[in-house]
Image (cartoon, rainbow, N blue to C red; front, top):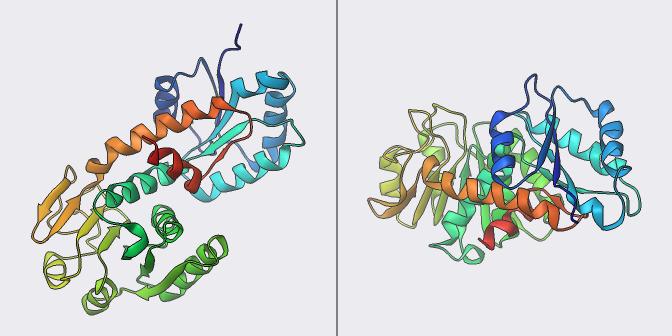
Length: 287
């Protein structure tokens, strides 16, 4: 008889994410163990509770999900999870704090329906945030030439440096977008623009889209008015906006949810998976 599927949810927030819990249940998890306010120093004992109670093939029936609203805190927890494994004593683990990985994967997959990512130039507005950096990572890994934009060029340079370490042969450049002229220069020559900035900030105006004649697809990941790209509706899904196709946050949201559920379900296929941005993107490709 197969063991029931147990998912250990590690959340650094005061309250464990209900969203992540509901998705876990909808993904076929039999038992969800939620821990909130988790700090890096607490991770090892929690992980050892997973790996010392089952052995051999039964380890695949236990998995770990790292969530919450704080991506940096989530990454720290993931690092401690991986450090707690040894030899065959490990279980599969997924990181999707703030939904950054699944959202980025869904955005890039939307663009890939219309563009050959290996042949394009792309601009990521608000590229230094957690979702923006992951969008840039996935685009660079797919062969695109990426311009990572920020109002502060220093932050953009740091983000680019980190992405280059993951993709040494990739093409990524930091660009400054502190005014309209700089933004127009940043999107010039790009076939794709993804807006991943903070909620309520317009990053791209309709007049700038009209002036960017090479532009073919825009993706806005902000669902809070005013949206990040002027003229885009949050529900847009390959909607015509002048000469470009537009996606809004809800337009990619359905794909994000499918990816999230598929990734959680896949955790129980083996005990050796580590699902971060790139691995989550690969799961999304198969949907």
